Image 1: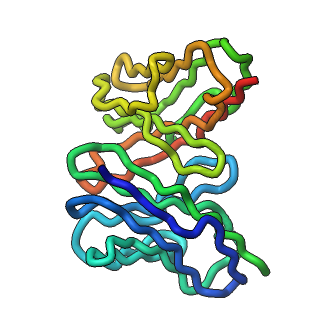
Image 2: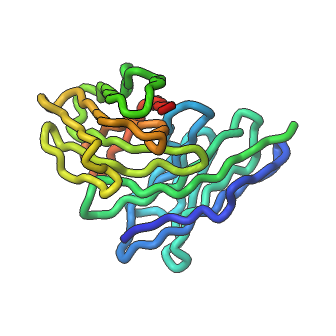
Length: 113
Length: 115
């Protein structure tokens, strides 16, 4: 069965600093991979997704993620964080034989001015 | 651009009462999903539909939970005899077949508080 691990529950960075959020997945084949962002009390917005092809994926709001098969990872990065990036970030994996997504427990990002 | 719409956004109910949530997906989307999210956790899959057919249900979906999508458009999620452990945000999402590279769009959720 698929699973997703986000090792960092809470990350604090200064505005303008770089950011990397970690995501590791467990799945027997090449999964579909997603990063979503959630502001307090709101639904989820897709930042980016990986289905196949280039392992470096560009998303919205200046985010990117890199799929590393050897490490079963799909880490999210941003070179310079803005205060408006403060939110909860969820990594998710989709299997190739079902339409459901399995989410990690999330990483809460706090940004200091 | 009308996204996924969920109603009501907030519901407070007494333990033992029944509640129903409605989801209106993006109009051309044939996939519709329900997830549950508790504080500090990621969304957990409950069930999904392809048109009006319910294709998969999680073991989390006890007998007290029922979901329908009668005409392949809107969906309802009913919880009977609510318990305090049902307090959560219920998220609806819709998409075209995502394995073709399509995006799954989420609504803003329906908060349930059972007192």
